[in-house]
Image 1 (tube, rainbow, N blue to C red):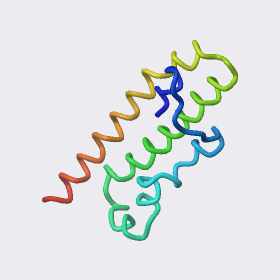
Image 2 (cartoon, helix red, strand yellow):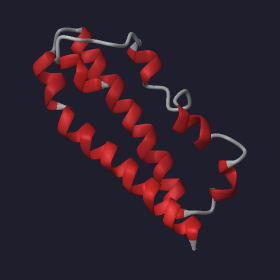
Image 3 (tube, rainbow, N blue to C red):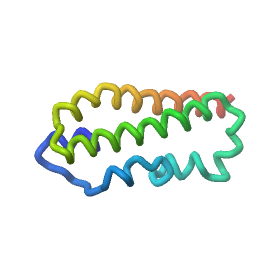
Image 4 (cartoon, rainbow, N blue to C red):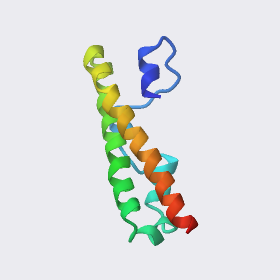
Amino acid sequence: MVESLFREERTFQVAPSILIKDNLCKLGQWIYSDEASKFSDSHFFGVLRIAHREFHKQAGTILKLYEENKVDEAEGQLARFQDTSETVINLLNKLKQQMDK
């Protein structure tokens, strides 16, 4: 999604102030749900919450920079954003492995 900012087609319209909120996407809704509260003692779940929050913070920052025509600065943030995205995915996989035991 954020990378599409740097291509011609921009297929979404969302304000950085909305994108930064980590409880509006499907994963965020699950993380803050009663269903997920049963994982509150899991180390992976706690780290996932933090990483997911950081993911949204970084995405909002990149979008804001782009909207301010600071494209080079926004592009400079992408590697860190991709790392955070991979961290979220890895934590989800670890949480699933923990659940499967």
